[in-house]
Image 1 (cartoon, one colour):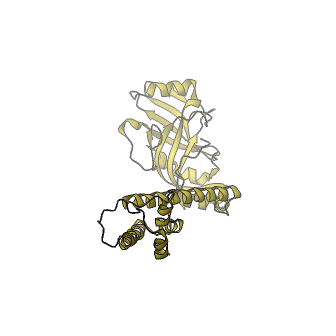
Image 2: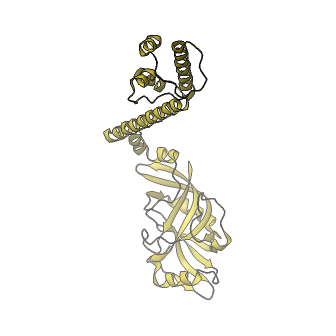
Amino acid sequence: MTDWLQEFCDSRGVLMRVDRQAGVIRGVKLLGLESRNGRDYLPEAVAEAACLYEDAKVNVNHPKGSPSSPRDYQDRIGAIRQVTFRPGEGLFGDFHFNPKHALAEQLMWDAEHAPENVGFSHNVEAKVARRGDRTAVEAIMRVQSVDLVADPATTRGLFESASESKQLTIEALQRDYPELVESLLAEPTAETERLRKEVERWAALEADHRRRATARRLLREFALPDPEAANPRAKTVVSERFFESLLAAPDEAAMRTLVEERVRLVRALREDAAGQPESRDQHGMYAPMNAESFVRAIT
């Protein structure tokens, strides 16, 4: 299994020499054998990878997004050369930087006076395997870059970081931390279940509010009374049972059909009570009429 790795490496205590005129910081540490990220680099894997770090590009900061993303021109500050493997310690090399780069002076000052302010972090594709609670790096397949990274909060000096920089995915979590994923996917806690039910309750209330608003709008459109009107005859035209039937309709089109049917029924009863056809004017639809006969007709 291969993965992209980023490790910030500490050079505190390492004898380094800053050659300002030549633009070289000699003897910087590029990679150790043990990472605070929980990775162990096999010594043979590190030794075999030394040639991959030769002339590796050095950029300011890691790329945004994918580790293999292209870099901006202004990010490039130099290259690594004269890479060697020291048994029991790791990889070391000389950092050749552009002395005219905007950050060159700051880099040299930090290297000489405050090495904890900045460090090197390699950006590599490697073959890894889980061994207990740690990850073993069995081979380094490709060196994308060795980047200059500032992270004072989590580093110990110039040139290993306690924080992961690689992009996390569900697949990576399932592979590296199966117990964690299993616990996250376990039965929801009582609090989670309570919140879910609360959300469902509010969603149901909102849906009921929208249905009632739609039903009242249709009643107004066809000049039918509001279901909460105090007029007894109005309550006969739009009874509580009729309004509930509107709310139970599957959609607005079905609601409209029920309202139109009620309008036709009211108009027919009024015409029958008056003994003659009336205008199609929908206003005044529930004018005084024989309530007893109306109730018999609609029940």
